[in-house]
Length: 104
Image (cartoon, rainbow, N blue to C red; front, top):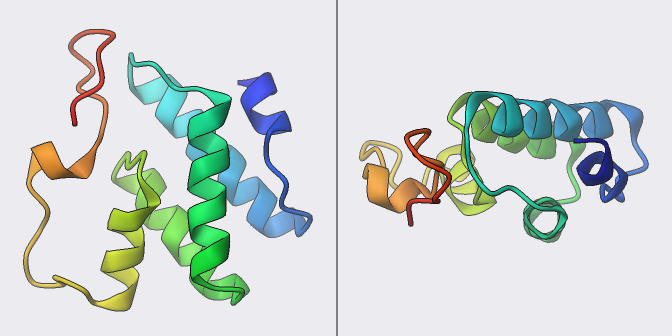
């Protein structure tokens, strides 16, 4: 987890702490392959979507609560895209927790 947290580029302490909670949740709750590259892609996706701190925090919170490895699903939830249609498990890109494989 420490190496993954070092991959975070965010300078705002509150947003950085949110990313760290997301990493903790993904690593602790799931038995899956989770790498620095996943962290960097997640952060890049969120940062490119918005510079608004509150929206970034909400995206990270949703991703943490729902164990989303892919920030796109959390972004879609925040922006209201498909708000009334929950993503299918196969679309969430979450770890299954059953094996060390990742479900896509």
